[in-house]
Image 1 (cartoon, rainbow, N blue to C red):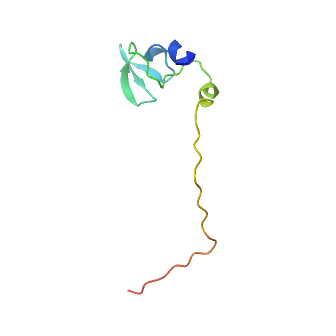
Image 2 (cartoon, rainbow, N blue to C red):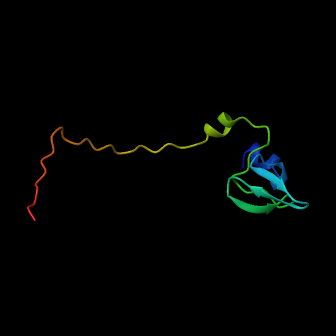
Image 3 (spheres, rainbow, N blue to C red):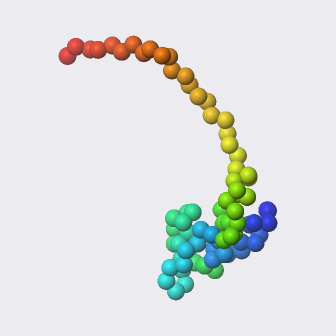
Length: 79
């Protein structure tokens, strides 16, 4: 576990948490209602962390690109 997740101990310390009402709030990452005292999930980020710090951890998988021929023949059926 890296330092950013250990420092974000509860939902109320996460940048995705928006307080709503007296005791609860909303997680904009998961799009669900949460309580501020709940233990933070693995998607949590510190409120003042830089986006590029987390972006370095992302894995980009290679994608297969199919190239279509220049001309495609289309058959028209008479009805």
